[in-house]
Length: 107
Length: 121
Image (cartoon, rainbow over all chains, first blue to last red):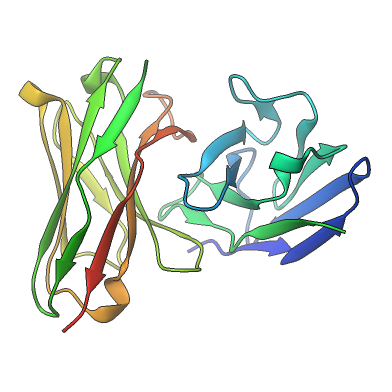
């Protein structure tokens, strides 16, 4: 199975800064990569699919990039509600797999 | 609006089975795959499998093969996930999720609220 490795496990940024979250696949997943946001006690919420396409209703401060094995989620000037956990998800191969998550916290 | 509503929390003893339901509304139930994903307390997300609501065909993670069964009832636009021979490490929140595209593998654009399953003697 494809292993998805997210880094860092915890990212501390100050409001107004840019947060850069990474996700690496153990083999190519082409652009079949999604990012989800999960707030405490809530279900995940789709942010990005196809590596860079924002889902419906997602603010423009969220952007995705990458292809193959290396992907990035960038959050420009995170708002208070953005300081939660983010997961990447590959749906190119079976079984589909998720990264272990990156927690974004306020510095 | 598009919505997936899951059944309530369950408590089971080791060795028992549990069946979680996922009621879909606001869209054509037969036009989107339903996936099941679980999350152990404080842990990440784990994909379990998916079901084709039209044909009932399933794809399971090998990890759960033999213990999981996914079914659906089109008449009431509901999907089900049954897990047998429960162990303590099956304690988790179980989510159903809709895959947003029928024609090719895609991301999950709608999630249920989750069902907590606790396995404890």
